[in-house]
Image (cartoon, rainbow, N blue to C red; front, side, top):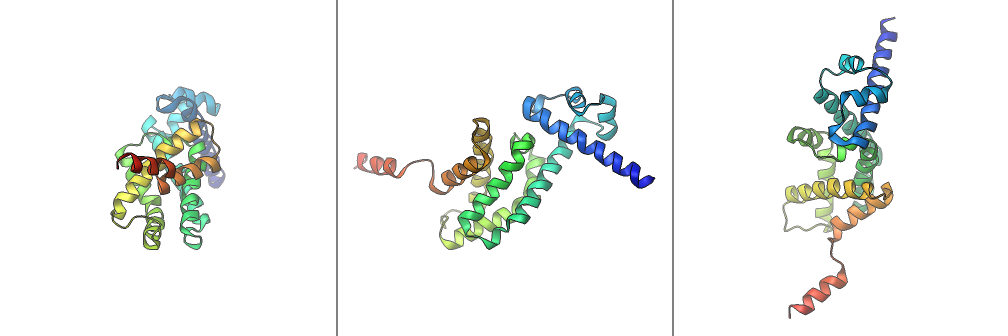
Length: 197
């Protein structure tokens, strides 16, 4: 009986988190507990029974999103594929989770960014390190700075790409392409070079 009650409690918490994910995707960080309760099919009191504050709810949602990204990165076997393919798998994992959990691609607090680094940072860093060792990434820029730039491009790029209706595959490919090659075209670089002579 205790086990059944526990499982019901877990199902209710999951339903609230799923409702919160949908509401945040539509309303952004301004979403209210009342909106989450309506989406979950319950009342505010039920939501507050599981999550004492709005901040607790958002924090639990953040943890759920990071946990799912972590699972996807484990399944992606990043170390078994060529660097660029591994990098694309990283971005795809974040994009596929971020599409459902808007909190993952939204503006994060310093604490949330640190938790993100703790959960997925080591694998992303190892992938970038492999790229730098292979010569695919610049060696004259510290890897820590490359990792920071990559994180910024991924979050901002995916946020915009998904908002503009690009699919996960297309958005992931675009982000990786811009990161690896820069935003300028080869033709544009050649024109700029000719113009400065």
